Length: 189
Image (cartoon, rainbow, N blue to C red; front, side, top):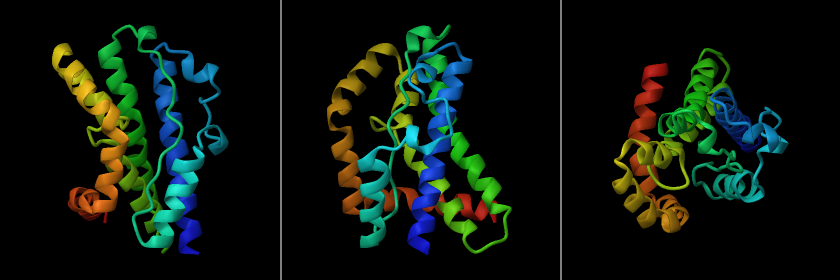
């Protein structure tokens, strides 16, 4: 039952996360997510077979964290009036939706709601890491001076996925995230 609840919580959290990216981009003038059918809460529009199904299932069955990802929401920053600022807003929309979802589920007094709270928090915190392709890297790149951002992107973009996998399987990801997760849970409860 916990496995099913964990995967359901992940699918809901990921779908809301991607929908909020799409909604923010749409509101800021970029029609790209709408054109790609991503301005929806329907999980089928956002599911990545590896990131939303396989990796979470492997994590759950092996005792590793149930973490995953969806298909990235396509955006075109050239459609924004202020591309750097607006890309930060779009990047923040996903993790903020996870924190809001965690808050809402923390108000439900049912044993299974904690799974939704933790899953939403983990997804929000994880996505704020400044590693490509995570939202935190988009935020960081748009806060850095353009030249520094270009160097950072060149240095990490090709190795982002590998770094994330190494962090996950080495246990370093848990060491980074657990104190933040504990703080958030303490704040919510």
